[in-house]
Image 1 (cartoon, rainbow, N blue to C red):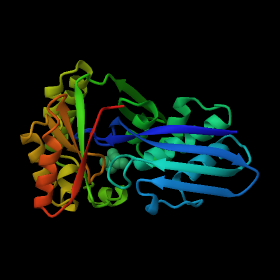
Image 2 (cartoon, rainbow, N blue to C red):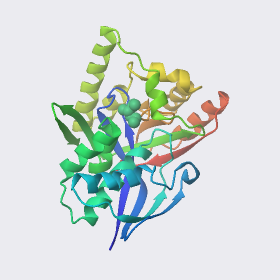
Image 3 (cartoon, rainbow, N blue to C red):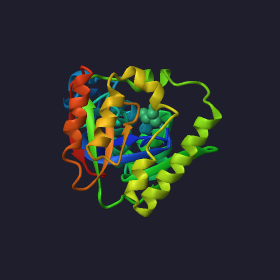
Length: 292
Ligand code: HSE
């Protein structure tokens, strides 16, 4: 028996919602999984295939084994095929696709003993924070966070006329490196700033007020620190806003940027941001994506 799952790219934080807000995008990785008597056959194709280990070190493989371990079942031999469209180490949730895809595929193979909430807990245990994995699992725009032992989440409606421009620079940035530059404490006024922006952003998304959502995307808790790792990030974001984006934020831990646009206004945004980034010596490409 073989199963196939498709998992969306995600953009986390949406500016101020560090480790809390995530949105799935219409760009997908596909995973096919089949049980064999023994051993591991692995094929990875598509985006970043040369960087992804096709061995037992692979995150999809680890997620599959995690499900078998949790269910107390013997680890089987596996035939795994992954075809990726999501760029790797660019802040678009490629590791969340691997975790969620591996967990969901293994759950399917086992006859779905785990609920979506169970899968979320396993995914958060693997990833360490819920924002990308919750959006990859449930789609759309998701607010998530742990209260006590339980990961809670709320799905927000996706504003109908929201179109995203994702600008991806040609340099990798691993999340663990991008988290290392974050401070251990922040000024009270910065915390207040972000509380205000997250409130505005979530309220605006829930009511379809795109202009307020875009205006609320400015963050002071992580982006100013990560900027030092991404030359030209500020100029590229400014260029996006000037070209008509309602708001621009670092996508997850970067280095990509995501611009929120009103449908119909998106065309000049990507080229303007690419040009600004080129001015800082960084090549980039852009994608126009709808939320999933
Ligand atoms: N919230 C995470 C971060 C997303 O910004 O580090 C990246 O996985």
